Image (cartoon, rainbow, N blue to C red):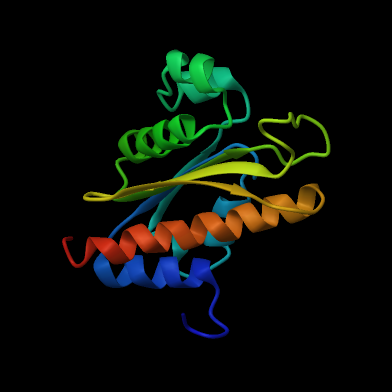
Length: 165
């Protein structure tokens, strides 16, 4: 990893180099990932847009998350994160997408899904990666750690893609 270079700067520079595009679908981060990407000069060349899908109705209506996935596993699940990433990629027509859903706290946690539980997914032309993480700290800390992990996961999928654009 390039020391002193943010993950979002690496995403933008890689997409500029490879002529690829990115979209986001965010729940628990409330647009923080999109904010970080768009803070990088040159992001307008590669960032198509993002959906902050806090409500389940937005997850299903705008991102195409199956209602069955929400009913079976809940909004904070690998299945929903995956569907959000695939939905964002397809709806924006992006080469790559990243999605997050989780419980930032301080309320909303359960014994099965305590506060700090997040599910992340990144999708590309030839790769899909999904993860569940548990982050500690207050709401801001969970959101910041989730955004950082999401950008890292996006880079993993992008690096696995090679030069196919």
